[in-house]
Length: 210
Image (cartoon, helix red, strand yellow):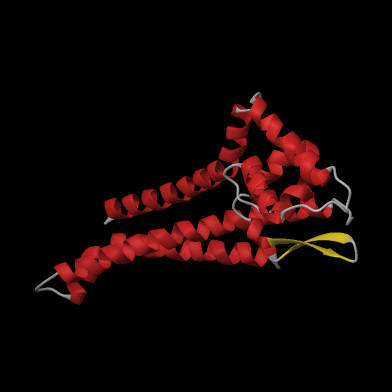
């Protein structure tokens, strides 16, 4: 029993650390990729093309939304943002452009940029960051407990369900462990995602509405 508890605890701790590392990597891998191509002339040409074609133009000039979206995706590469995000970040964060693009990679859908009376506004769709973080973290703890309980008491659970033919119970027990691990990872991912959204929301608030 003590050995089973140790194994289950190690699995839970490993899953926690693996999710944190995975979340950190997902947030920073795009930025690291960009650094590897800092001296790529084509990247500079794409940035210059986008700026001259869609940013540094008079308001009266017509811009094709279709072509703009293609050029926006080409500039941002693996991060598929709406072109309005590309415009906003270039205008307000030119020296930290790729930092914001990298952080928006997994949470841009939680932000909305719109124009109201010639004023550009950025709003975050998420409310009560701390409550949501606590809620998702509690879900993580809950599913981690399920994994530990199912791992510790697997023999007892199988015997209670079916003593004569344990294979069906073993099958459902395995599914329970697998789905608990999946939901555990998802809950921790959402917890870290809320942290990213909160940080970006604070950064956006530093820029006055245009």
